[in-house]
Amino acid sequence: MRLLKSFWIVLLLFPLSAQAIDTKASYALLLDAETGVALFEKNANARMSPASMSKLMTVLMTFEALESGSISADEEFFVSDDAWRRGGAGSGGSTMFLKARSRVSVLDLLRGVIIQSGNDACIALAEGLAGSEAAFAELMTERAQELGMSRSTFINSTGLPDPDHKTTARDLAFLARQLINNHADYYRLFSERDFTWNNIRQTNRNPLLYANIGADGLKTGHTQDSGYGLVASAEQNGRRLILVINGLNSKRERAREARKLMTFGFRNFQRDLLVEAGQQVTELPVWHGDEATVKVTTKQRFDIVTPRSGRRKMVATVTYENPVLAPIKTGDKLAKLRVTLPGLIPQEVDLVAAEDIGKGNIIGRAIDSLVYLMVGN
Image 1: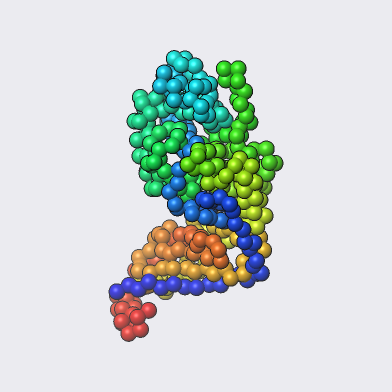
Image 2: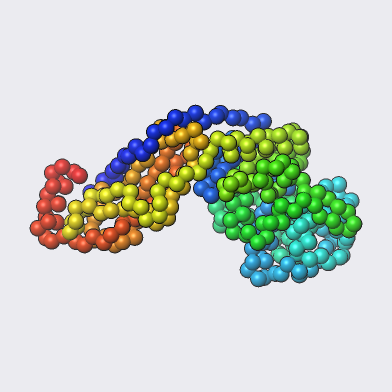
């Protein structure tokens, strides 16, 4: 029988005093964008009504269609009577002020969604991409599940109230990472501060774009059911954070809480290099090999999120199945390096063999087996 063994290494000791924080938001999640490490969370896995923040899924579906070549940015979609009636000027909701039975380019519709939060623009995109909004909403949910947004269900393209239209702060943060990391060419649209259509100029509703903290997207939301919410991202000195908040009482409270949490994340945490790509981390014992141990390393550099005040109480462990059985090829995944810090989720990277280890001779293998039976490991 092969036993699971953990090898513990204490790497660094420094003072630690991470600042505590809270928020008036009912739901919140603050992420380091590169690592996905949560710096603060509150009801992040609870299903909630996302309002217009769910338009980010409509945007993602459109970005993917553009980049696959199935549509083009200058292709014009038809604005149906239904899109105009439910999302246009007379609907009482957020609108791009589209004219019924007009044709509008995909790029302009995207600006209408991202900058103006137009429900009419969302419906026009949904109908242009899938034939109907209902069919598009099914595709939204299907794509969300494929991406791992397991607690999200979309009933429409707009986020207008529906008891079954739900997502979570964590799913929305993951969606934001998708938009930022995989669609850079179109993500820039989120930073545009105003857009004029039908001679009506509207400004971007994201309050952090005007806060001088490096914000460059993403999307606000508000209905009576959801309260005021925001998915936002900001970058300072090469480090990006993603924030999701929802359930606030006013635009002013949303802006205040968003800025407070972003500022907390940038001031109190940093990303540090722990292990260079290819750097040896340790050696693992080998069973039935022509060598007694095998060197293990990382394939890529391993950055971790740490409190700016230091790494005291940080524990790094290498977990592997002991004994490691020969033969071993360079690059074989053999272990995990896991780092834990108070208040943060564990951060992990795979460790791989840095060398080939062949099988030992029959006598050596027999001795290994005898020792293992006698002492266990």
